[in-house]
Image (cartoon, rainbow, N blue to C red; front, top):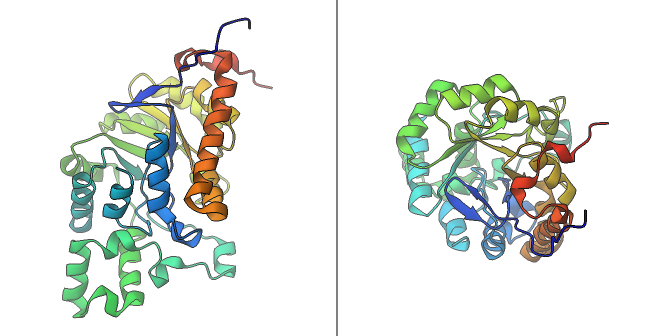
Length: 306
């Protein structure tokens, strides 16, 4: 108390990039079902505010369009090359979506956007996928969107488990930082370090893949204690307020991802709604951060477990 915190410094640096705050936009697919501004609009908002934007493979906008707005090997390599050529600098690999979770609510509501071509634009706009589809079916993607959707879904959500050894392909094809999203255990965090990864995101996918998963904030401190001095640790899952951001930073995260909140804003008010949500979170974060002038002074000494 009684410290001059009039001029607060929320800046940080992640993977060689100087950022105005530790907040990042998490990857969420099929944003066109919420608003026609979709990924393009949110990417533009992120650029305007100065918040890094992470594009989902299940995007309803192409890599090229999102990049424009934001200032197995046959399909992986072309996708990575497109991402690199369009200015994406960090590769984030979500570990827990190689298959879709069993979601009764989605089944009850017949929520299967990928079956009708929604959320498939990353694939539909990919030359390698289009070439393979045409060779196999003797028709263009646009001639049979349902069939093309099924083919792309089989690639993205193949149901075939991936292994640590397959990360070598990514390291060969991607010359920038690689971050693994979905780490929930110290052993996996250590494996990420051994595999030469640059960062991890402690995340349970917001409880969407396994609703009985351990709370991400609960395991964050032990993961930071184990590998925080060897790899960049980010946090995701359940961030709703500025105080939530503070908590994650105090427990050792170097950056914090938000998902559902910006989508709520997008659904209500398009890209302007998403902008309002992100700005609101940053304003609340700045206000509560006034107890410390700089981010590096935030540590677990500010949190009491009850």
